[in-house]
Length: 90
Ligand SMILES: [Zn+2]
Image 1: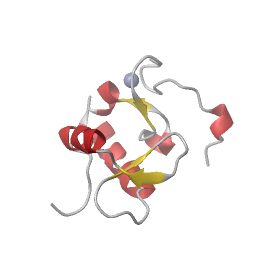
Image 2: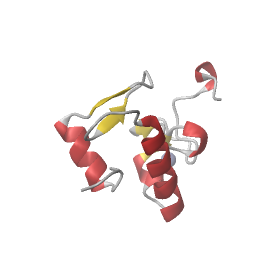
Image 3: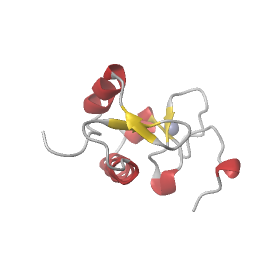
Image 4: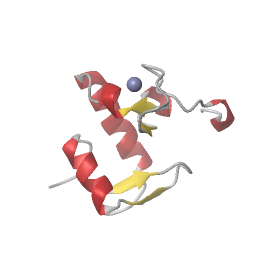
């Protein structure tokens, strides 16, 4: 369990806070997209975290700052597909 008040707004790998961050690192730590796609391990971890956070939404869902899944915006869906982070059947 991660205490949200102890989370920092920086990537847990490169410690950058200027990039777009997602809670898809190990233990849902924030990770930037650059680090996320930097290795098969981080991509696989992100896919696991993403699937776990999905809840029961159909189609593509995203997790925003509140931690609650919601339906992805079109631009977000395209980004997730670009990074190969969508889950489920095609
Ligand atoms: Zn990073």
